[in-house]
Image 1 (cartoon, rainbow, N blue to C red):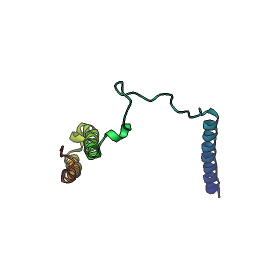
Image 2 (cartoon, helix red, strand yellow):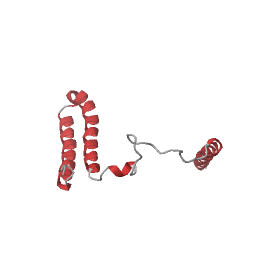
Image 3 (cartoon, rainbow, N blue to C red):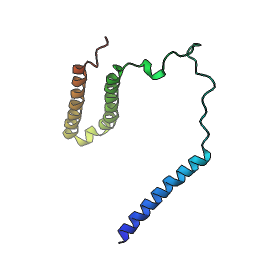
Image 4 (cartoon, one colour):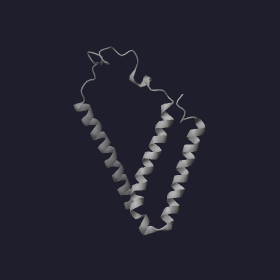
Length: 116
C-alpha cells in the first residue's frame, strides 16, 4: 500500500507543480500586442514570409549533414578508447559506418545530392 501512496504523492506533486507554474505564468505574462512596425530586409519591406524562402529540397541534405555531424560526435570518444578495447571496437565502428553509408545511399537514390 505504501508504494501506491508514494506514487499518488508523486503524481500530486507533479500536478501541483504544473498548476503552480501555470499560475505564475498567468500572473507575470505580458499581454500580446502586435508589433508597431514590420522588420525590414535590406531597407525594403518583406514581400514573403521568412520560412517560405527555403525550398524543401534542402531538408534531405540537411539531414544528411546532421547524420555525419553526429557521426563525428561518436568517433572522437571512440578514437580515445579503441586501443584499449581492441578489435571489437573497430568492428563496432565499421558496423556504425555501414549504417550511415546505407543512409547516404538512400539519400543518393532519393536525389538529395543533386543540385539542379
